[in-house]
Image 1: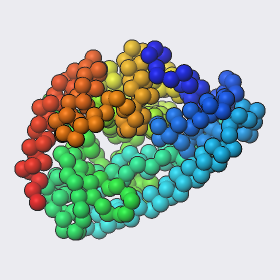
Image 2: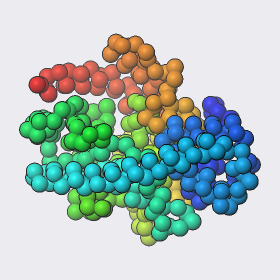
Image 3: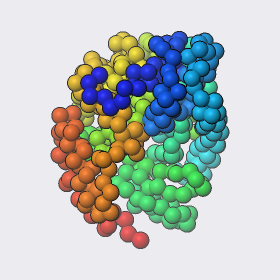
Image 4: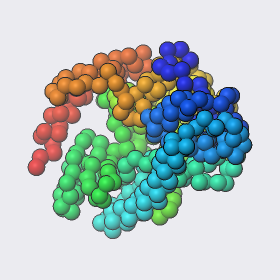
Length: 378
């Protein structure tokens, strides 16, 4: 692992592996300062709850390794994990409630990412135990609304008297207090128009009869998520930043696939990903998953590519979940153009991974600014 920003990275990966049941213990007992760093890194990657499960596992299997864990930090970690569990229960209810409202209003919907993916979480030690999913840190609620567009979604939100913010892919609105809801006309877009059209054609052609119900709401099929979750990570990585929570979602998806169908699903997925210009990113991500989660080669979507993987992993470790810890790569300028230029300069580092998407970004951003000004009017 070249050019990685922190000496605590290897032990952090080990703690993640203990949490998932991949390994029984750490290679050594961390010091007090290292435990503080591990807690910080878990928070940065939005996997605080998952990593606390690793602490609990060590307490049972190798208690000497957590002797240096300060009691105050351990209690704070426990409180954070308990709050994440509470939030997951609340989010499940909100998802079911939201889908009920939308379906009552005549909309056909499914929940993207989030709570649907949390259902796939399980420990390697006990594949039937799904309690790991309750420790997955929540985000917002993303809803894909079938056969619609942004103007119609905006009209619908206005008819309900809700505040909203519209983009080319979704409308963010305040259905519930303290819970962000995004209604998507399209699951995702690319900034390169050629690949974006291909993605939209693939999404529109997908059979919703393959989707299924979880906890009183509909979620996409595994074959859909095999592409969509990667597209989501790809977009966030290139333009904002992406963390280990999203990568862990994909890990759980890979392990949930039926063994007999895995090869067929992988071949279909790679054919689609190549047609979307995502092969290099996928190869790099497989390398990261190999390093972080010890993903076996037989479980990988394709052959890993180390050089690309090191670029991806370095950025993930530095920027954290959704790029919130980007440091000196974040512009302090209040000017929209200044903020965009800072973001674009960061994305130039990834030109070798996705030249078409990066070079299309300036034109797309100008178009999107005009679209929001003229297409969505008060």
